[in-house]
Length: 284
Ligand code: AMP
Image (cartoon, rainbow, N blue to C red; front, side, top):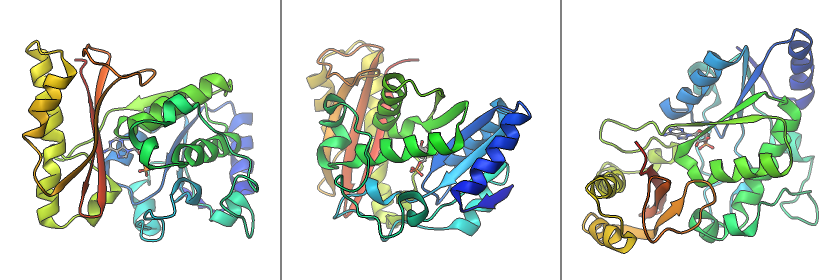
């Protein structure tokens, strides 16, 4: 595994690999790597000749009141976790956006997904978040030129938006969605779980429990979204600040009032200052 910080170093390495006819897999991350990230890296290593992992806390996808400054940065440990990868690319914000860049669309060229995909779920409260995600992912695709790119279903709205971007802009990469890795308790692994106190972590279990119960009820024949939402509220207490619980189509995020196998149940809850998201597909 080789660690580089400069775009030029990545370009040179990629050029050499392409000359050798090797396929390239790409796993974009913000670091603080855990078993969820590792599952994406392993998929890429299995499928591709070479794997590139980016570690970059992307400033343009954080809102003004979000956790950009306190987001965990653990590069040394991340290099150990990602040692199966061939190349780790950990650029600075200045390397990605230029010295003295400003977080503003009168300064940077942005890639903006369709409004219909952004005005709901996380996009509703995180204004500009998916513009920042699509812009940085597009930049990484131009730098790494991967054949395959691996994204977790943990951030399912992001995965759906990236697929849409790749299709609409004819980007020559195949997007591979990877299942959510969970603790034995059911809690979806997330770098932000490190913000939780032990009591808050207990409260956090409600998200997966509630989603798994919805799926169980659906399998028993309940398809009415409002009825399923009602069952879910039993799992929440005064520590849970529910942002949304929505049923949406797995391809285009349309709202579903009657649930079917193509439905995803999405939830976002704030516990204290920590915002947690999870989702479950009604399929399988
Ligand atoms: P992040 O570092 O949070 O930007 O995540 C980088 C990639 O890892 C994204 O594609 C995430 O969806 C994915 N990821 C994060 N947590 C998990 C998880 N628990 N299971 C599977 N994939 C995950």
